[in-house]
Structures are given as C-alpha cells and as structure tokens.
Length: 124
Image (cartoon, rainbow, N blue to C red; front, side):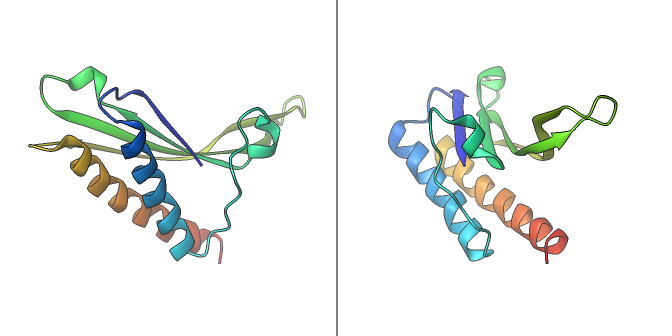
C-alpha cells in the first residue's frame, strides 16, 4: 500500500497513518494478503495499492477526490514487454463540511469496502 498526499497538503503525517490504518483494516477484514511497502525497491512492491488524495484543485468548494489504484505486472501484447501498469481504479469525489479529514476518512472507508467486495468477487 502507498498513500500519495502530495495534492492534499492539509493531511498531516498522523492523519496519513490513520488513512493507512483504515486501508489495512479493510483489506485484512476481506482476507486480502498484505506485504510491507519497501521504499527503495519498487520491483518488490508489485502488486501495489495506491491511494491518491487530491484537494488542491477544489480548495474553494471543499471538494476532494480519492483515487484508489491497483498497479500490477502486465505484458504488452504487441512487443511482449513486461511493465507495471494500473490494472484497476476506483474514484470518489466528495465535499467536506467542517472537518475535511474526517470526511476523507469516511469516504475512504466506503471506497475500501467497495474495493474489497469487488476483489473478493473476482478472486474467490
């Protein structure tokens, strides 16, 4: 798992850990096997679940976007090259009211529940 908050400067390091805990808990509840993320060894981090949080483009309206992607090894048919690509993606756009991070956490819980449902259906 990796969480990209480069477009969400209001998310603190502690809140980022909370988001990671939400993701991990939902995945474990769905019996989805997890491996630790290794920073300087990208080839060992595949498949990888990436959560991107973007609040930058809609600061004035209070909207944010969560993008959950699964990146995995794929082979390109035309030249048989192996590469890593996004193989699955879910998006959610929501509007926060008073506490933006709490709204992000609630939206992430819904997004992860949907991901786990889809994953377990496709990978019985």
